[in-house]
Length: 121
Image (cartoon, rainbow, N blue to C red; front, side, top):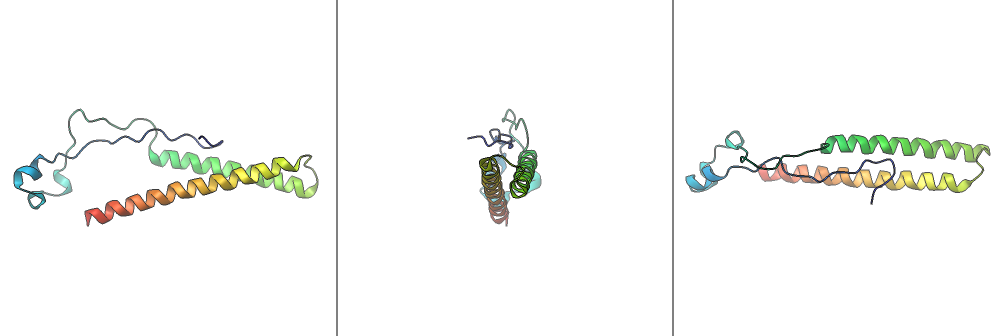
């Protein structure tokens, strides 16, 4: 479900698959030469569209915009310039939910990176 102010994340597709034939021929991982020997498979699908980093930057920028809007409406509500308090409440809630979403995605990305680093060690 799209959230206003945050660009949709496209489908994540792998950039290539490791060529494991050298590992199989050598009789296991002991014969592998490490990361330097890994090559992509010809014809493997490549990533298209925005990168994950660009999506996160867009999400943070959208979050900042929503927080700024919520702050502006909150100031108007306190000073009495706001005619409908519901607008301020909705803007504040939208900013809060968006912050929680961006934080959750960031935390999952950090967890995935940590897991990948753990597997390589």
